[in-house]
Image 1 (tube, rainbow, N blue to C red):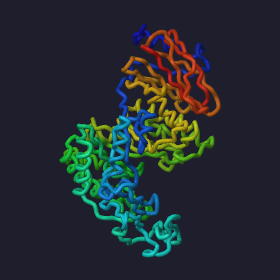
Image 2: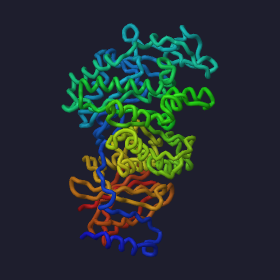
Image 3: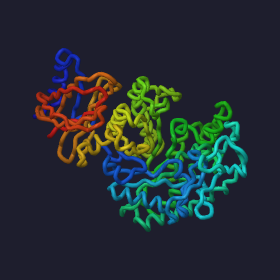
Length: 534
């Protein structure tokens, strides 16, 4: 049986207060706020074939700082600031071997690869016999703050005072110059090996990684932050080269690191930090007062839409992405996912502003580019992977992505397969070990206090089931809930799957519902999936 809208309104009015005292009301309406959930929001980065299969993950990203310097011909990369600015060889000397291996394992798991194309202008160089080369040799540049514990000649690029950076190093020490033409050869190698994107080849090419902070992560090769027009032009040239070889390939940009990079070019970020934040030359000059990413989009629109997907990175900035599981930090994690969607939530970090990231990105493309442009979050992490708080946070994030209509996301990186967070991801993508998933049509699910208990609902096209995720974020107390099932079957029996601090996804007792109400109790810090048959 189904209720019409008038009956549903009367029903919700009837069940207020006394009849449900003490219970959290989750209002669900399968006819409201309906939209497709893009499965690409459940992507990961650098996953193995086994991890991709266990997570039933649709996307696998080859990204991060090291990919900015990937030399496909030598199959080598420079690790930049992450590890003593050293150029390291891949295991194989075959051109493109690491990327090809990544693509192969990704495809073997029925997932789709995303590859990062270097734009810095330099890629890694190896020494004789594929030996490691340092950018800041102690023999050449003198004593430094720290050295690679496995190679005393590889310094960290800081003078012994540990604050002053070495300048004037020669990039040729550990790099060779790169060009659009060289990267196009790599694209042609990929097409020759795997086919064009329309035939199962690589469909997504990411325009480098966090380019505005090259002056930090890759200061051995690009010590001055890129001006706005430098990155704009590099993307234009690289996109044209890739699309000339594979017209249906998708260009993903700008892959920026976070909050400051949404507004300011790399040059501005560096200049402002060095001058007491007095000035932002690009922002107030060439950009004409426009913020960085909106300016890029406007420039690219004028150039004919070289970018197909708008992508950024975001990490919470108050320590949530750490292993800290103090009570204070757990409660902050419970709140701070609001940065992804809530237009009224002020970030409780140095950002100190209303982030509303997904609506913000959609506003950027609507106002400055093309409103139908997909938006992606290609790096994020809320930490505490080994703790149930990290798991409930990840489950909350997946639910937010689907409800808010994000088009693509790739988590950095894959949590250990024995962690609660890994299992939280499986609750959406493989809760029963046979590839069963949360629904693909998002519908209305509202709760009174999402910092304490959140819920997400979706219809599953394959069998018509209604799937509901309930996340009790409370650190200590169970919660009684009533799911008010608007415009769905009056009565039935739901399967229930649950993850708690016990760190096992369990099929718990089925839960009957009647008169459009399902009542249950949610343990403290738990994730419960209800599968209600049509």
